[in-house]
Length: 636
Image 1 (cartoon, rainbow, N blue to C red):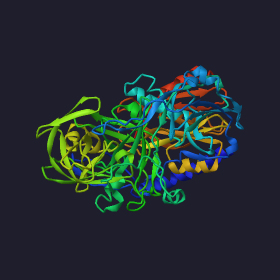
Image 2: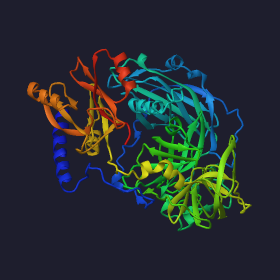
Image 3: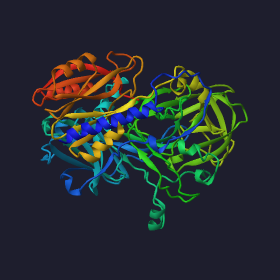
Image 4: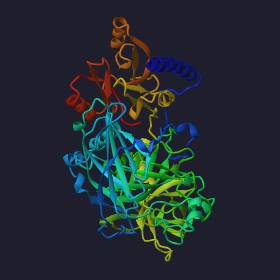
């Protein structure tokens, strides 16, 4: 009955959308656009933020009893990376022998039955003295409809939740970039902010616990306190106990100055994992020539230079003081943990361009940029997180150009009066480890990214070096930031798992997604399944949606002939809408959508994940594989 009401409501929604489209809605026709030399900034509107909250609330009693894995104090020396170049080291990798293999981990799960007939179990990892823990979950086999949760034993009712299929997609993205190592198959959990993290896995009723093969051979032990207290916490504590605020004294609190007041909303503190070690850098959200709202994010190649590391990225937004020199974090600060797709990285200008997986928060600024060359004597500002501190502002001057190259490890040298880098001297403020990748601004627009340097508070004659944005732009960045043929935004297609019917439901409507989440608790939200186009255009084919009144499931087809055949021969299949537009053929970066038929339930299953396809073939013998049906996209 509830499926029937979803169907009826969806038809009404579709009609409303059709009316809105006729009144000036978005068009899928490509817009002609010349290659630009500069772009203005734009502000993220409230309406653009349609993400579903990843942190859920539940009864603490719902948490299963967890097995415990304990690690002692960190034995390695807590050293930082060189201040001249490189991200700031904040966490060390630690081996976890108790969960080093899938079989060892399997022996620690204490499975209990869920109310829906599935199974759930948890393992608690404790690292003595840690300010935070990120677990490196090595995935060999994971059901797409599994639910994975991360929380602390102190707060089991507040959980981070992610679906198995989203983890599989992250792994496939790493592997598609050429990494076939175990690192590519590792999902790094969010940092709990404490010395303990609990990993919980819930399997649907159709999956045996023996089908799960994951392990936690390593974790990242955060030995720096990344937290900054709010004003209320400061009053309660009398003083701050944080480590992260110990940047050099000449750094200027960005909240004390009107300069950069808009640009500072484009800057985020970055936390990421490489080789099980955790690091800090700074990055900047960029606008593109069409103001599409795609979250392009600029940082340094020496911070993130491969996809596997990009997938671990966390961004901290509005990470600045609540008022001038308050030392307290403003209340609007927010955290995104979905990682990113690495689009381009180059050591020539030490630049990295990423596409964030999460939507930036409302009020974030997509910074403007200028791809013209900046001359000697230009006044500039820097906005960055030195030592990972609250946002700081530096004032300086472009002193010229230089050629720079890494000599060994984190050391580099720069020389000459020409090259791919700007030489900058500061009149106020400086940079430190953690500032790496931050943007250089001139007249409110990005013109460079921080490589490194010897600038310190006590010596204003020493210089920092920034990769030239104009060089990186002409080399590659223009392909994303100002494509000559324009671009048409793809829309997310969301996926649900119905625990009662065992079938999946897909929708390209955020409104319908939210309606289902609010109304039907048996529909477990599994996040974005893939991306497609919301409107008809040349080369794009419609995907049709049916409701099967007998099975209570939906059926999707990318074939006009199949649509007509179903309408003519199967009256129990009620045709609803064109759900989205994709491609019947391969090409244009599209990936196949694989389809299965469940002979027991009469329902179909669809996935863009080859790993999930293989899991279903191997584990679910009642699912008959029907092959690729049409092609969609794994990214915007």
